[in-house]
Image 1: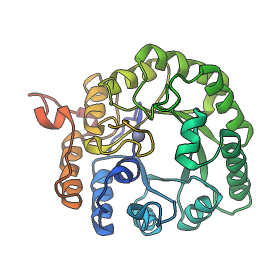
Image 2: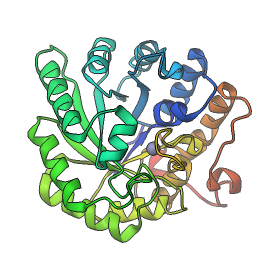
Image 3: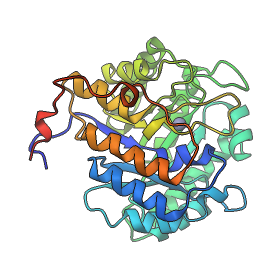
Length: 312
Ligand SMILES: [Zn+2]
């Protein structure tokens, strides 16, 4: 498609992070059509499911099926969230390329989200790494540190603790550690500072920025993370989702707006904005009545806007 290598990687989390906070269950066929539309738009990393018990999250009961469908696309990294060893086993069996394990920086959020302390979660991470190392599959493991910028339950989160947790995750054998503003409390100065520290501590193992737009700072925080050297950004088509276990937390960064910001700055995402806007149709078809967010979709692309590097 393009001869130009992309400057940043947009990691779409809508089919997982988005759907898990929606009450209605999207039919499997609609999820697959939505993922296909994202791939057509040029999205090259998608978190498609969460491997959790169907009794806890009926929305994710078809995780293995969705993964198997998504894996038909070449050149796309298919990710899934796994909260524990059992989930990791199922994700590896389904054939994912990469697993994300959430570890909370806040002890209170950890207990609310996965009913484990941070130390217990790190022990779980070690077990997941051992499982992966013992399997034939070359599955990458990323730890996403949730509530890294503040917690709706405990309030302030100590930055030293976030970095110590990230280092402990690397010591446990994971490939990457990203930071999540699960609760939408981050500001750009804090984002720049904490990602700079993460990169100083972890080098190439410093991972993605997962920002929320709860207080309107999602894009500003992504840009701050970019300035600090981050090159992978999580976002959700139409801003679907947030975190069901962090009270008051809503609003993933809108993929359409994020792609527009980078592309209009001349920073290549590899994502075709017109096709990305079309992908909203598949999302809406699978979730009738669900509000879709985004400023760029509302306003449309500016006159004369072109993504020259996407031309065949
Ligand atoms: Zn999120």
